[in-house]
Length: 148
Figure (cartoon, rainbow, N blue to C red):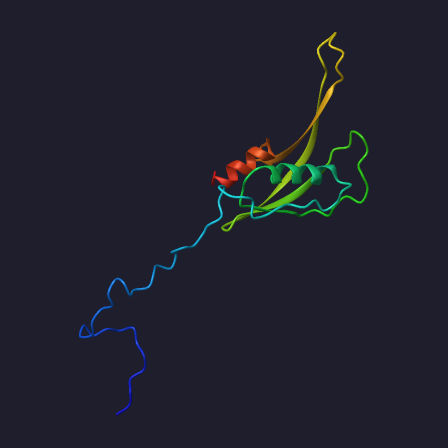
């Protein structure tokens, strides 16, 4: 007589394995990256001459997230002139989705109060196009990480 091939079918006659000998569930011990640990992805600027790319790297590497950030547009070959608007597209990917957003670099200059002798302060901020308006990139990453 020939032996039957292995099968997962049980006829009810063979004893079931005890709980001590059963194998663990498929997700036992699995780790899903989240916001608790260090960033699994570090963004490295494509060009040191691109102030937007440098600022995107500073922002996304300063907050905990599990998103892959990639520049879609080619890098700038030369540094932009003072006052030029710098824009580029970036892809933000999670395990379940990929979204391409447009980012731009804004520079805010605040004048000091009169008579204090302080020089004006300049702050750089990366804004991304969301819906019909612009949102701070840091806020966008935090919302996207939370699934919003």
